[in-house]
Length: 486
Image 1: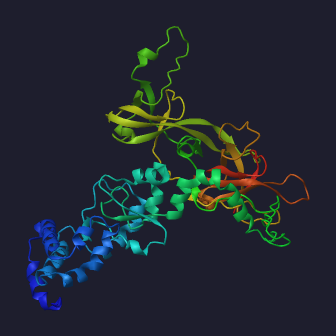
Image 2 (image 1 turned 180 degrees about the vertical axis):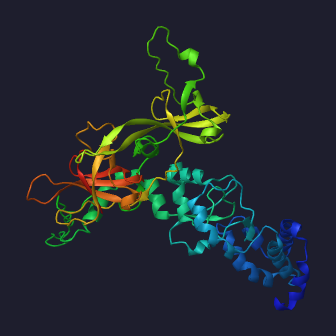
């Protein structure tokens, strides 16, 4: 067997290739190694972790080759050629820019130019060895044509959950570009929760209840006083126990929850661009009517007041917003802000300095003339494990408290329950973040402890307010009830 060190001079001469020919040289030498090595080259296409497997098997492949001298040269040549590639840089140069890329994902419009070869493919990233992923976790080798949106739709049944995949694979520094051959980690537990939630609810409710009850302190012990051959009694669950919640992470909202509700903002928020008229205005005209209600919906063409001079960009999608009434605090009566409702989305087709033509791409409700345009926010759907409600004897957390100040559907609602959306008077200024949970409680009887009503999950936040969803309930809630960060 020929030692690799003995052929070092051969390696040195094998890499004197022009830099512009690096990728082609890599392709040719890979073909040569296929003819002189024993099968590893054919396995590259089928393995789920090419990035590390080929690197690990390279020494054994070269030593087992029938023609030992050419084999190391052909294996080493692509690596050296990759180093000479003008646009390529070493992996150690990437992490410094990682945080900035995550914070502003839309700052780049072109693919990364600094590529290097990992295993059998080119990539600008430094993906980890898939063998280091947690046991039982799902992995996915990216294929030509894949997008994070499409993969989120495939694994979570919801394209808006693509940030969950991105955040799990922090080595992807630009979410706009992913590369065939790189291996993604798809959290096994999260995927099972998202895909199997319906099956668990339908077929595993009894088993889940028993499992949750077994964790309660003081639950009845199985087998105590059990007759021979009889099933052990189930642990007793009462209203005093911490009940509810999920065993693993689940999506806390739907696409409609975050893109068809709205927010409480500045009463005088500047929104200069608005729907001016519809393209088929003559067909909508009602002769003799004193008021022309020319509402639009998905697929309608529209003229927009405003253009490049007011900040619009051709090809971009904007949120359609309808300013509403002022929101007053239920206890202090102070003005908290104005309710802005999301009613749809519009895409800019073409424009000049002051006027724009657009098409309605999504409608949550009828879109009236005068609906305002707002830059499209990127709102990832939070994914988290819903904790159980506090038990009867659990003390308060002692953290920041606030109030429910508004509800989706109108402030006239007097009974709020699980699944409904609300606004609270806590936001980013109070360190409240999406995915956080708050306990809803009421203190109506003087001298008695508070009564726990349910639990909220925060979906989106503004400076001083947040949108939340009721995920667990014991009793009906209403505007004015207290909330406390868990």
